[in-house]
Each structure stands twice: as C-alpha cells, then as structure tokens.
Length: 282
Image 1 (cartoon, rainbow, N blue to C red):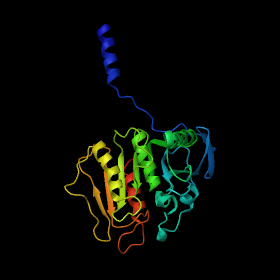
Image 2: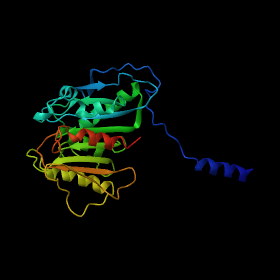
Image 3: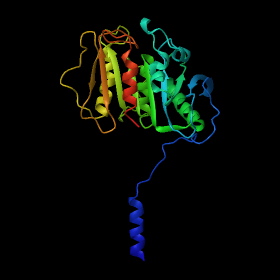
Image 4: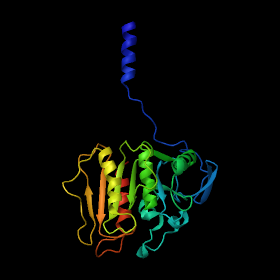
C-alpha cells in the first residue's frame, strides 16, 4: 500500500497546475460602463476613462489595453484624439478602431499632466486600475498591454520594468526613461518606435529603452544600428529572443510625432504596427 500511495503522490505531483487566465469579472453582470471614473490612490484623487465594447459579452475574456498620454496631454485628449496632421494622436492611439470590439481600454490621467511616478505612485495607480476593472469585467489576465507616446511611452516602459508579470507587451512610441525603471531585470515583449530627427527626446534615449529589453529578452543585436530608408520607416524584428518575448524596433526619419507616416501614405504606421505586435499573443 505504501508503494501504491507513493506512486499516486508522484503521479499527482507530475500533473501541471492549471491557472485560469480569466478575471473575477467573467460571468458577472457588469456595473462599469464607458465613461470617466475616479479613485483614490495614496490619498490623491486619480481620474481615468474606461471604454468597453458595445457588444460586451460577460462570458468572453477581453484584452485589456492601457493608453498613457504625453506630457501636457490628458485622458480626454486620448479618448477624443487630436489632429494627426499636426502631431496629434488618433483616438486611443488608433488602436480602438483596429481592435474591432475585441479589447477594453483604460485611459488614465496623469498628475500635473505627466507621469513623474514619484515613489511609484503611477505604478500603484496602474495596480489599482487592474484590480478595479478585472473585478467587474471579463479580462484575459494573460493579455494586458500598455502603450503611449513620449511621457506615455516612458510610463509604459516603467510598467515593463516594474510589472513584467502583469504586462504581456508594451508599445513605446518616442519614449525615454522619464518615469523610472524599478526592477527592470525580467523579459517583456517590447515594441519600440522612434524618429532620428526627434528634437524633444533624442533617438539615443529610445534606443536605450530598447536595449534594456534586448538584453532582458535575450535577443541578438543586429550587426549595425537600424536606419530609416529615406522617408520610409524600417521595421527590425530582433532574432534569438526568448520564446514568448519578441522585440520589434521601428526607426523613421521624423521628429517627435506619434502619427508618423511613410512616404506616399496618409495613415500613421504606429497603430497597425502596435496592434499587430499585441495580437500575436492569444
């Protein structure tokens, strides 16, 4: 009997534990709607917008996408969008239109219109947002994403550093290390984009963020630094990365602009590139 018991224990020990990737909100009637909310974070009132698909199904786990605004911007401006022909970003960085009701968007508002992340307070804001949204809505907790332009890119990078187990991938558009990098030793799928003529955050700052995750993700650096092809962007998919942790870098010859286009095109390439990068994960 002792031998049989030992065999059963060994058998049970060899069975992998299966964790559900569905949030607590799955199967529940939602109370949250598409509108602006506020919450208290470290004694400060913090605002955010939530956008939920019109045909929301409480039994379907959705992607959860965080979109962080630039310095001087606001959550309202990300929701509304600004003129892409004048350096503005499309609504929800152009992702909502492409997502076609497959994602829930969270659009936070920064303190002093930025993401200083003093004492990690903006990362704590993110933590509370995840907890609040996922308690009420059906989210695939393996499919959380973050993107932003400039300071918003810096905040997405800060989350990749500080919350690698919570974020599946980030898309950093013309970012720099402005919101800190607490931790920053674990891999996260990383999409980065920057212009060689960036007059606000030099391209070297964007490359610095990229190279942190080239190292963390175990990717192989190309033989030479990727350069734009005239007025067209060049996309480099890094090789040799750890399974599940790809890295893509897009370089263009433009300035500090979330809505850069290729020659002969009127469609910004960041939205399509970002969404393609995010949706490789299912």
